Length: 460
Ligand SMILES: Cc1ncc(COP(=O)(O)O)c(C=O)c1O
Image (cartoon, rainbow, N blue to C red; front, side, top):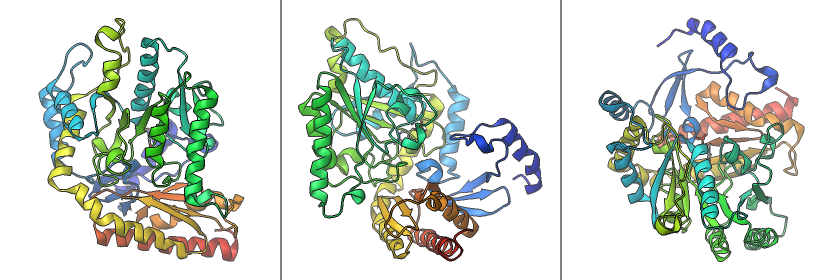
């Protein structure tokens, strides 16, 4: 491993040459980022040799933990045997095997796998397929995509256009005519006195009214994360997805379930759509945990019914001209196959089902802090939301509470993902009960320290 003093020049190169995701342009070139240089299990080690629990598992993706030599070996073996082969006109056995393993685990007739380079390109592929299908079916005006406030579906042009996080929209163009955003489905923000059931009815009415107002002949699909992840771990009321799917299908609107975060065990199942939310969508998009983050890979999984509707005699000789040089990259597919084998053999989905109630219990116990206004989660995903305002409104001072908590957590041995006044975490799925305790003990202490900073002195 590199010594800490090597990092003077590395930090300089990072600042001089690397443009990071969500780069704040006011401070570009002047950042003091933490570098992680090695990792094992749920822990990462920084350039100073400090070991931290990786609370967000990278970006919700390192399911089987770091340092898994079986996955590393599978990738190395594949690179030696056949590093790459064009997927355009020919094929390779490894992505074929992977598509078969994925199709065995998807609900219903979701059996056609289009490999992509990540989650954004999986969403782009889903949206382009929906557009393609309606063109082939002679419905070129049926193109509007319904999405939701706080949704995140990615960073390519189409995926960003159907993402509903307001703060991300300020300075970048979007395909304005493509998307229509439904209101926030977070039951915690419902007006005082409104029951969760009434809130749910209202959200369903929002969806159906939007379809009717725009016109079912113009609405192509509804895209939804089962739980809205980076929008702040928003868990819609029970029954929401099932009823949404019924509304969609009543009006010939396709349902795209974005399982980029919720797939591959995050909620204790291969996919959450059917096992957790009782729906069989028309399309599932996935990425991240498919390879446990060891190498980029995503997939857009289409139902047989969708493929049937535009194939053979119904195809009008059309080609779905969408694809990537690295669609079904053999090395990525080898990593995914080994990852699936490990998830199954080590019974990691069962482990998630066993430990997640305790994880959720410890998460919700954080509510005893005066600045914690909400805790939300499911499976091994959690979010703690804070405000120093007594009425739960967001104040200017609240804006960097997440960063403050993250700073204290890092001092104490934990990385969390700060998002404005929230911290989200989704640890590697192999986390033990003791490690869950350690994680929440650190969170608890960090929130206590931030409370003291904010409430006693008003600043850090
Ligand atoms: C639900 C969801 N969809 C899509 C994406 C985009 O995936 P990627 O960053 O791999 O392009 C993300 C990324 O966080 C996501 O959370």
